[in-house]
Amino acid sequence: MNKLLIVGTIAFDAIESPFGKTDKILGGAATYIGLAASKFDVDAALVSVVGDDLPSDYLNLLKDKNLNLDGVEIVQGGKTFFWSGKYHNDLNTRDTLDTQLNTLADFKPIIPAAYKNADVVMLGNLAPSVQASVLDQLESKPKLVVLDTMNFWMEHTLDELMAVIKRVDVITINDEEARQLTGEYSLVVAAKKIHAMGPKYVVIKKGEHGALLFHDGHIFFAPALPLEEVFDPTGAGDTFAGGLVGYVAKTGDFSFEGLKNAIIYGSNLASFCVEKFGTERMVQLEDTEMNQRLIEFDKLTKFNIEV
Amino acid sequence: MNKLLIVGTIAFDAIESPFGKTDKILGGAATYIGLAASKFDVDAALVSVVGDDLPSDYLNLLKDKNLNLDGVEIVQGGKTFFWSGKYHNDLNTRDTLDTQLNTLADFKPIIPAAYKNADVVMLGNLAPSVQASVLDQLESKPKLVVLDTMNFWMEHTLDELMAVIKRVDVITINDEEARQLTGEYSLVVAAKKIHAMGPKYVVIKKGEHGALLFHDGHIFFAPALPLEEVFDPTGAGDTFAGGLVGYVAKTGDFSFEGLKNAIIYGSNLASFCVEKFGTERMVQLEDTEMNQRLIEFDKLTKFNIEV
Image (cartoon, rainbow over all chains, first blue to last red; front, side, top):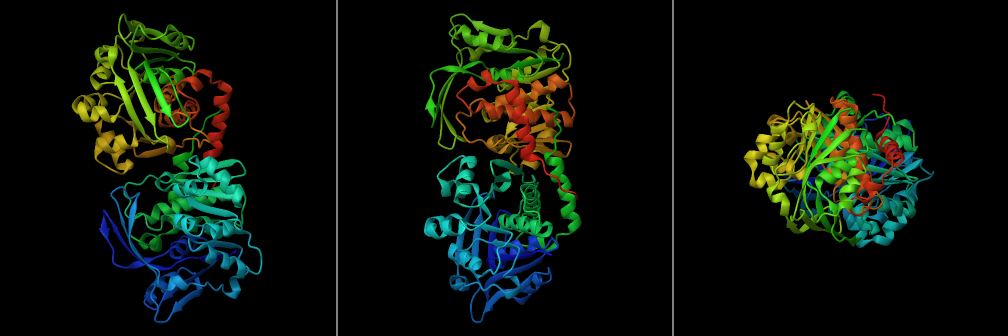
């Protein structure tokens, strides 16, 4: 069984959307990535940091999904990273209302010995220096390293970001960030420039417009499933990444064909994530629902033209 | 051979984009629809109005594509409809700099006798009352009527628009317009409401993000081909519609499966249209290029997951 190492935040989120408002609920990149990856039969571990204010129920919820939490540091007397945001009516844009780094400010991930030979490593959105420190601790070269990042690091720690991008196989990045990173409007040209920075697979996420996978001059497109109702987009990108790494860790297929299927699974899982607030939908999600919706993805895209 | 009747504008366009600027060149919905439809082996006629200021070369260019122009009225002493626009850097938004209706202001389409029994009718973007007058002149019920429209008619002649929408089989509309027409943000819900207005097929165009086809609770998605360079988006939506009607007129397949293929052809042709200014790319387009790019559409979307 392939080992999957996931590094990222476990957080308190407080979310406002046109459909309602939450108190502090479980959130964070590692949480969403882990919940999505847990849908696959893999040996997955989370590495993160929290304060002792995080309810043990939250950690138990992750343990119940067979996620190994040996690498989750609980800082006694510390407070858990907190993010609060408000979505606009279109749900495509949001304002950050509050960010309290708390224990995340001094996060020095320690990779558990049993996962220093992980086959697949998912570096969730974190400071590039923290992402690099994870790779430095590994004892063998992983079969696939996936990195997620965001505009904040482009603006504040670009050199460190470029250094870690050079070391990964797959980068997931949204369309506006790909444009910002490369100065190119065309996503095709932007992907070429990002390839040249290191990653052999470039995944550009377009939210409700789906995701593009670029590899060696080839392009594959995974649509987002058109939904009647989107409740809360929080965590959709991380859920997408979690589906991607969970699927490739399960299959061990790191080819372009394997990655195509992986982003379809990612898109599939993300389509569930947004249906309820926070992690609620992902926690409840049944395999039969996931498989049923894959058939919808198939129907959504299959055509038959003889040229 | 199925007869295809296309009603819409033939125009002078003057276009500015980040890549350059044109003088008055050939444009208009009927022009783009006709050029796209001419890629298929159909008996197609354009119905439109122009002034005698339109160079005969422009009309000859359309005739050379085997488009019947008996229904194109040339008003002696009249001036041809003129539109001028400037695209912003992202090419997704544009400002209209000038609109001169000229002969279009009094356009009363006369359907040539030979096309009053058309099998497929394409009502390009025009005043809804003008679109309705086309349907009123038909002597037999077409197998498929397709209507394109825009926000202007929703704002100024909504009752007439609703009356003509009720009479068509397919509506093509862009995402923002679908939201405006229905007051619904979710395109799935918007499409349901538009179905209830009459059309059994609802096509929502999302520009560079592709197009959705809704029918009887089912959804199909045609991606736009990711391009390195987009020069001029003018006419892309009409080219899409022209590919759609040209394909269904050729095949005579008005089923959901047939329409799926039709919007793939539409998206394929639109991907060429934007590669050069105005109609230039469509005029030159070879069948071999079109077929080659269909293979790219296939590769872009095909995946193989066993559930």
